Length: 430
Image: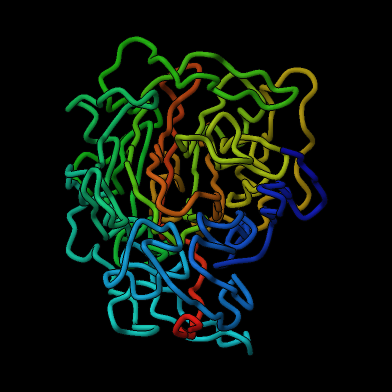
């Protein structure tokens, strides 16, 4: 792997092509975005097969000529007649439908999932009517738009299993149920990015003011752990020149076992991180973190974590995109840092405090000695192989102590996939 960085973000060389992480405007704030469709590398069997497949363009931009297809000529795990195009590994019942790009003059509509329909409308979100205190992990994955389910050793794509865990993957205890929630909003100015709900994970209480069990202080421990919790290997991750503590507290996570569509090249999701550690505890031992740990680790990840900024910093108060705050109330940036402290960002708090209103992070429980901040909605993009089974563990924790809690919102999980090709089937020459 070779990394190239510039002022717009991080470019990760994956499979001979680039996955580009950049900072762009989105949804009223900063968005950590990336491109990892074709850039994530070809899917299995693409660009040739054991049959006679001579594609004009393997990326779905034009037709090909297929002769003598099968058995499973494209090596996607499906054979005719179940596979409606056995010359293209991006077309099978295990694939996901890819709408035709209206901006691409060479794009041809294709029935990627072999259901007899071309460019059918996507299914509606599956997260309506969820209760904020629902403790079923099957509801939590629906809240982030993971609607399809799959069976172990099957061929369909989707969620195989979802489990509440601690940050290191061990099962969470029943006492931790207040640390996660399914929320429609995070105050009046922050809404779910898709569907009706989003996942909320917290090292304090994953509740909003007015909901039963909402936090009444900035050190509300919900997990019941009186001792430190073992962190995942290689975590907490230090920030350069800001060595943090090695012990974590109040950790909680959602681990999802997934099977990717056969034509998938990646996935993406949105998240939004908030912490009472901001701004005075920037670059200190108290470096609360959110991670999205993928196993097996994809190319470009940091110890399996796929959510970080262009400098490789983990998601914490030290991330480059901490822009939701009050420049007057948060005027104590990094005052406890010590030596080698980062300068105050310029501009400082460019998104203002509006996205903290009504979340519990706005008035800091009435104390003038406390403040808080957050990021705008950010987006993580990660490469993945088509048909691969993998786990994603969304986890958050307090670092160094159980005080000054942090919260993350996760929403809008989406597969990135390669469209199918239109194939002209011709009889073999006599």
